[in-house]
Each structure stands twice: as C-alpha cells, then as structure tokens.
Length: 197
Length: 201
Length: 89
Image 1 (cartoon, chains in turn purple, brown, orange):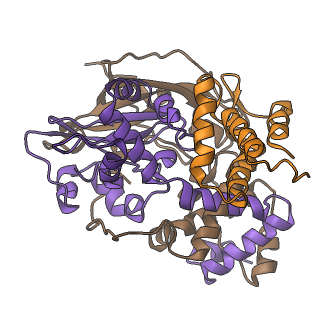
Image 2 (cartoon, chains in turn blue, cyan, red; image 1 turned 60 degrees about the horizontal axis):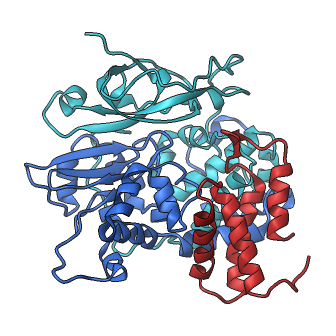
C-alpha cells in the first residue's frame, strides 16, 4: 500500500469504517459495547440544553445563586447536578443591556457538554468558526439576532480548557412566573449567544 | 480557522437532532468510550488537524471523530492499519503522518501566574509544524489580560513529548482594530502563558 | 462490580493522571460509572432525574468532593433505594 493513497478522499463509506473500527476495538478489549451504548444514551438523551436552561432559570429567580454562578460557574452548575467532561472549568458570561456575549471555538468544536449537550453542526462549521471572530455583528444578524449599535458584542473563543455558558437577559414576563416555566423560555441558541430571548 | 474569509453563510437546520444517522451515533459513542476509557493521550485534536485538508472540509463532522480515533490508536500502537484494512477489505483512511519532532525536554512547569488582570501582552509570533492552541489570527497581536484561569498541561508539549509542561492560562481581550485593522467588536481568546510575552511599547 | 467497588478501584489505581491530587477524567472507572448509571437507571425503569436528585444531594453533602466521586455515591444510593441489590455480579 503506498502512503500516498491514504491521504486523499477515502473510497470506503464512513458507515463501513465505523463498523470495522468498533468491531476491532471490541475484539481487542479496548471497548465494550455496553459502555458505548451507555455513553450514547447519556449524550443523546440525558444531557442537552434543558440542563443549561435550568441553570439560567435558577439564576434569574435567585440573585444569590446568580452571584455564585458568575463567581464560580463550575461549582454553581454542579449544585444542580450537572458536571463532568467538557464542563470541568465553566465560566458564565452575563448579558446586560450594554454587553452581548457570544461563544465560538475557532480551532475545533469545544462546547460546554454538561449544560448544552453535544453541539449543533452549524457551531462546528467553517463559516461559523471563521466568521464569528471576524464579523460577529453581521453573522449574528444573518442568524436572526439583532444587536443594537450601542451594545458591545464580546466574542469568546474557547481555545483552552474553559467552557462558556451565556446567561441571557431575562425576557419581560410581566407576572411572577415559576422557575420551570422560565426554564422553558431559555433556548440553546441564547446560551451560545446567537439569539436573544 | 478564525478570520479566514471565503466561507459563506452559516447554514442552520431547524430542530436538528443530536445524531442524524446511526453511524454518527456509533462514531460518537466509540470515540467517547475510547477517550473516557483512558486509551488516548490527548492527541485527538492533533490527529484531526492532520486529516487531508480537502477531506476535512467536505466530510461530515463525526467522520473527523472516526478518523482521529483510528489515527490516534494506530499511532499509539494499540491497533494497526493492517488490522483495519483486513476487516474493511481495503485501506482504512487515516490522517497524514506526524512530521513534528518529538520533544525530549518539556521545559519548566509553573503554577504561578506571571501576568495580572489588566496587563498588556502580545502573542508571540511563532510557527510550528506540530500542535498548538494559539489561533493564527492572534499571533503577533497585542491584547489585555481580562481573566486568570487555571494551570493546565500545555498541548504543544504533551502531544509531542512523553512528559508534560503545566502552565497558567489566561483570557486575553483583543480589539478588532488590532486584529483586523478596522473598527469592530472585541474578541477574547484563552491562551497558555508561553504563548504570551510582554507587550512593551 | 458495585458502584462502591468502582470507587475503590479508582483510588487504588496508581497510574491515574491527577490534577491537584484528585483524579482527572482519564480513568476507565469513571467511564464505566457514567455508562453504568445510565444503564442501571434505564433497567430500573426510572426517570433520569431520580439519579440526578441523588447526585445533587451527594454534591451538596460535600461540595469539595470531586464530581465523579459524588456520582458514584449517588449511584450507590440509587441502587440501594431502588432495591436492586439482589442483582449480583
């Protein structure tokens, strides 16, 4: 086999390669199927933006929790039972009338798994990764997020170990609303910073 | 990839599922199981970076995970390309070979931050064949330290060395005028200490 | 292997990479603890929040304790409460 041949586009379907790799790793005892199934189940169903939404709703309702969240994101998020891989060093970014925060990973696809789950394709795509640091205001507008000219946009590139969660501003809700109902208002995109509520 | 031009609009998909297909599900599960299971050595991003650039850009995201995992395990000697090929019936595509030299000396570790919030720093303008987490768009650029973060293993070292170098990390704010030569919004980048030097005048 | 055994096995491992003295996530027992929790909760036919509430209690009990240790304790508690102890190795 020439070395050259392997560096271009593969000729085999990715489905076949996944099957082969998984089978080989199970045979070698590097993987067991039960662990793989458990991890898939966890990341497909047990973690996701509904976790982050609970954190945001708690912060909106409880000013002491909000203060703790901004001072030590990891510890405050753990109070709600969320933590682990890709969330060991959390920083929460508070949106205000003067500041709108938005998160990107220009180097790869770093994302705060325990509170938002696995990232959507657009977050990992070359257009988002290249353009969000270069022209954030334009990209946000294209994505349907209008930010006033008097508001500073702060872009955060998660290039090291910190993972970010945006704390969106609480929408006007009029009457007092329950924490659960508030959590239902919080979208994944608002916690990345590409949407406002 | 930050700051590269020529990419078009961000394409959104309404109600996007976590996994679009079963192969993605299996690919994600196996990469995580291998990673969490302690069979890797923190080289997966470097393996992804060494995919053929054309292939990297056209392939679905989770194909990067399949390729990086296979490449990392082959390079660690846990599986061989022959074993993969025998089962696949043809060559199993992996990333390009690692051309960076191995480091014998990791350099000194440090757990004390050299810089403080408010300090003006410059990102060193270095170039490497190997792995780094200093984005190209900030190299040589001047910024302000806004946050002191924890002490972590420097990837530029642990990917290429049997030992590690631990150092402080920072979040550094860069003005748009500094990065792009035009007015705009600031970008904050998280950087290891050895990427930085005093800004001087 | 019970959740408690997982915890013991973790600390017995001399080669675990550690950060500030506590094990980091690169440990096989933590991956198994994660997968085990999911499969156990599913097997018990309970909602995930039943486990999460116990995790919250374990973290609250000692916020300084590493996350994964609280996880294993929560799993131990869940198994005991769900009366699954008859399913031995």
